[in-house]
Amino acid sequence: MTGTTERESVGGPDRWAHTVAEAVPAIVGALRAGGSLRVYRETMALIERPLLVHVLALTGGNQLRAARLLGVNRNTLRKRCRELGLARPSSRRGPVIAPPR
Image (cartoon, rainbow, N blue to C red; front, side, top):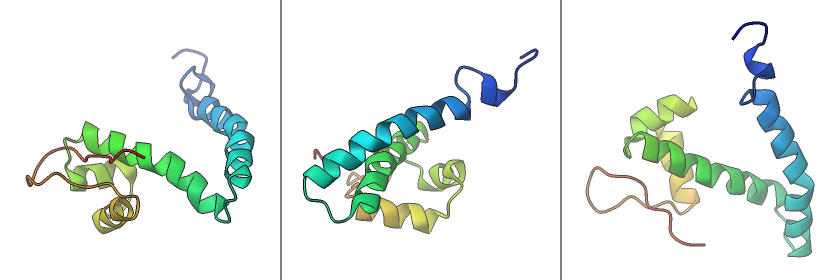
Protein backbone atom coordinates (compact mmCIF):
# COMPACT_ATOMS: atom_id res chain seq x y z
CA MET A 1 0.00 0.00 0.00
CA THR A 2 1.60 3.17 -1.11
CA GLY A 3 0.72 6.31 0.80
CA THR A 4 -1.83 4.69 3.14
CA THR A 5 -1.58 2.88 6.41
CA GLU A 6 -3.53 -0.21 7.43
CA ARG A 7 -5.80 2.01 9.57
CA GLU A 8 -6.66 4.10 6.51
CA SER A 9 -7.30 1.16 4.20
CA VAL A 10 -10.80 -0.01 3.30
CA GLY A 11 -10.67 -2.96 5.69
CA GLY A 12 -8.53 -1.35 8.39
CA PRO A 13 -9.37 -1.36 12.10
CA ASP A 14 -10.73 2.21 12.07
CA ARG A 15 -13.42 1.22 9.60
CA TRP A 16 -14.57 -1.63 11.81
CA ALA A 17 -14.42 0.47 14.98
CA HIS A 18 -16.70 3.00 13.29
CA THR A 19 -19.11 0.26 12.15
CA VAL A 20 -19.31 -1.22 15.65
CA ALA A 21 -19.72 2.22 17.23
CA GLU A 22 -22.67 2.93 14.95
CA ALA A 23 -24.35 -0.36 15.94
CA VAL A 24 -23.97 0.08 19.71
CA PRO A 25 -26.93 2.46 20.29
CA ALA A 26 -29.34 0.11 18.49
CA ILE A 27 -28.03 -2.94 20.37
CA VAL A 28 -28.26 -1.24 23.77
CA GLY A 29 -31.70 0.14 22.95
CA ALA A 30 -33.01 -3.28 21.94
CA LEU A 31 -31.58 -4.96 25.03
CA ARG A 32 -33.02 -2.29 27.34
CA ALA A 33 -36.40 -2.50 25.61
CA GLY A 34 -36.31 -6.23 26.26
CA GLY A 35 -35.75 -5.59 29.96
CA SER A 36 -32.11 -6.64 30.09
CA LEU A 37 -30.27 -5.91 33.31
CA ARG A 38 -27.00 -7.23 31.86
CA VAL A 39 -26.49 -5.01 28.84
CA TYR A 40 -22.69 -5.27 28.87
CA ARG A 41 -22.55 -9.07 29.08
CA GLU A 42 -25.31 -9.55 26.49
CA THR A 43 -23.72 -7.07 24.07
CA MET A 44 -20.34 -8.75 24.39
CA ALA A 45 -21.92 -12.16 23.81
CA LEU A 46 -23.54 -10.85 20.61
CA ILE A 47 -20.06 -10.06 19.26
CA GLU A 48 -18.09 -12.87 20.90
CA ARG A 49 -20.32 -15.77 19.86
CA PRO A 50 -20.03 -15.33 16.07
CA LEU A 51 -16.34 -14.41 16.47
CA LEU A 52 -15.58 -17.69 18.24
CA VAL A 53 -17.68 -19.73 15.79
CA HIS A 54 -15.89 -18.11 12.84
CA VAL A 55 -12.36 -18.51 14.21
CA LEU A 56 -13.00 -22.11 15.20
CA ALA A 57 -14.32 -22.80 11.71
CA LEU A 58 -11.20 -21.17 10.23
CA THR A 59 -9.02 -23.49 12.29
CA GLY A 60 -11.08 -26.61 11.59
CA GLY A 61 -12.23 -26.74 15.20
CA ASN A 62 -8.67 -26.77 16.54
CA GLN A 63 -9.01 -24.93 19.84
CA LEU A 64 -5.29 -24.38 20.34
CA ARG A 65 -4.89 -22.74 16.92
CA ALA A 66 -8.08 -20.73 17.45
CA ALA A 67 -6.88 -19.54 20.86
CA ARG A 68 -3.54 -18.47 19.39
CA LEU A 69 -5.27 -16.58 16.58
CA LEU A 70 -7.49 -14.81 19.12
CA GLY A 71 -4.59 -14.13 21.49
CA VAL A 72 -6.19 -15.94 24.43
CA ASN A 73 -5.34 -19.02 26.46
CA ARG A 74 -6.93 -22.27 25.23
CA ASN A 75 -8.63 -22.79 28.60
CA THR A 76 -10.15 -19.30 28.33
CA LEU A 77 -11.47 -20.16 24.87
CA ARG A 78 -12.94 -23.44 26.13
CA LYS A 79 -14.60 -21.68 29.08
CA ARG A 80 -16.13 -18.96 26.87
CA CYS A 81 -17.42 -21.58 24.41
CA ARG A 82 -19.09 -23.42 27.29
CA GLU A 83 -20.57 -20.20 28.70
CA LEU A 84 -21.91 -19.19 25.29
CA GLY A 85 -23.44 -22.60 24.65
CA LEU A 86 -21.12 -23.52 21.81
CA ALA A 87 -21.00 -27.30 21.76
CA ARG A 88 -18.33 -29.47 20.22
CA PRO A 89 -19.56 -32.32 18.03
CA SER A 90 -19.22 -35.85 19.41
CA SER A 91 -16.11 -36.55 17.32
CA ARG A 92 -12.84 -35.30 18.75
CA ARG A 93 -12.13 -33.10 15.75
CA GLY A 94 -14.46 -30.91 13.79
CA PRO A 95 -15.97 -27.45 13.80
CA VAL A 96 -17.90 -26.04 16.69
CA ILE A 97 -21.67 -26.28 16.35
CA ALA A 98 -23.62 -23.21 17.37
CA PRO A 99 -27.08 -24.20 18.58
CA PRO A 100 -29.90 -22.04 17.24
CA ARG A 101 -30.87 -19.06 19.38
